[in-house]
Image (cartoon, rainbow, N blue to C red; front, side, top):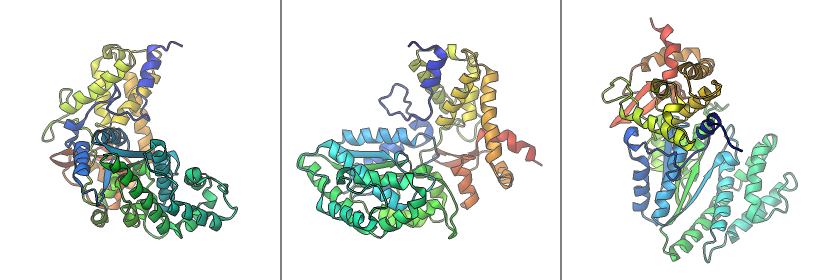
Amino acid sequence: MTLDPKTRLYRACEPSHPIGPDDPRYVNFDEVRGDNVVIELASTIQLADEATPECYLFPGHRGVGKTSELIRLRKLLEQATFHVVMFDVQDALDVNDLDFPDLIVYIAAEIQKQLKTAGIPGFSTTTTLLRGWWEDLLGLLGSEVSIKGADLDVGFGKLALELKNRPNARADLRAKIESRATSLLDAVNDLLVTATVALRKQKRAGLVILIDGLDKLVLRHLSNGTNTHDRLFHDRCEQMAALKAHVVYTVPISMIYSPRCASIEQTFGTFNKTVAMIRVRGENKAPVTPDTPGMQKLWELVQLRCKFAELDVGNAFDHENTCHYLCQMSGGHPRHLLMFLQSAIAKVTQLPITRTAAERAVRDYRNSLHREVPTDFLPMLMKFTDPQFDIPKDEIHQQMLFYLFVFEYMNDRQWYEVNPVLRELIAPARP
């Protein structure tokens, strides 16, 4: 069926579909993020001693493009002859309630599945240690979950789904897995070491695991006074860093502003450069104008989406200023720009997108933020209406970063600014 231009453009702007460098819609934002984070991380992994695999954190705002950059990282590493296992925890786990037992089970499932699919000569995913752990767990669980009799090659995947789909039984399942967590980590590491040896016999550089989706782990307070982020990334960092392969974890940006970040870095290592927002301002707090490098890159993003939809960008908007308005209001957040585009497209009967539709799209998002921002945050958000070069390292400001009320940028050093859509909400609070 032939689609009309409006439908083609709407689908070309889908914000939930991450794209990699081989996609015609991909834009390289390195020069306007402030750092070549992916290139540096790929180089760091290649330089690391193969006998002592490294563990890295990959922080950034939700929706800033970390998954696309991980896809790019995978390509760079594969070009350097590494075998890369990449997966998103959201595919099988509940980010609203995720703990270490869930994660280690899913890591085991994906490593097993993807290494089996790779068909590495002389390598089998059914190791003695994994088999022993699996049979031990089945005996411990009895008949309480529906994995009895599941083959080892698919059993870990089924167990991960049980953890996701049975919230009422989750605590009991976790407790039983937790009682065998150390032996499971040993079994997974035995599998990783065996795979690495087999890869090196094939003249490959080694094994890298890219674990996406943990940056979306919901920030929730727990009864013991801690929160879900600290429970996983701080309390279990020793186990998370113990995998015997190079590992990259996406993490919430708020984690690197935690008072506990220094102790986390002692375990994970110091590579935690943020995938920063796209700088829409010029140098030295200059105002936002259409000719700044960041705005030009966002314009390129829109152009490529239009081209993918077989449209000229000039026919997609009533005036180029309408596009510039959406780029500016995104604050350099790629997913927000795509969300604004889709929302504005839906508000017109046919193209072009009008300024009125664009403003209504931004207003809809502003209204949703209005409902989300706690009242006591407003006075503190006022401080970020102008770019600031520092941010307090406390829980409230961690939440501001995590919930996208304040954006982090990079220009030789970090700087911070309020989400542009919030400006009108906090302006009335000014004295």
